[in-house]
Length: 90
Image 1 (cartoon, helix red, strand yellow):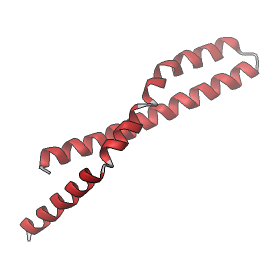
Image 2 (spheres, one colour):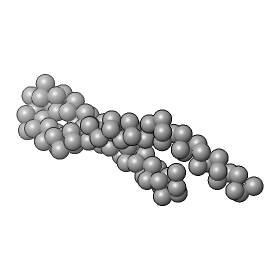
Image 3 (cartoon, helix red, strand yellow):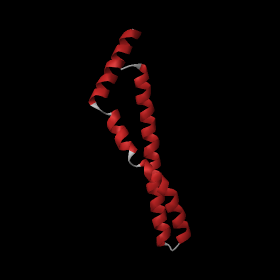
Image 4 (spheres, one colour):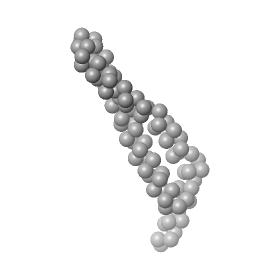
């Protein structure tokens, strides 16, 4: 594994965190819309639902990003790269 692949893996890890946070925000906005609807605040519930509607797209990508990052070949290559890097520094 080269340094550029390590950079891509780290970038995908950051992307995983961002997508997970946005998916959590989508779920939170849906819950707030439900609570507003229960309290007969239809306009506020509609606003929360429409705001959360676009964030639903972030629910699926974290699953595939995590599967790609945690493949056994990728983990073995990372360990081998870090071992090689530590040997070259000493």
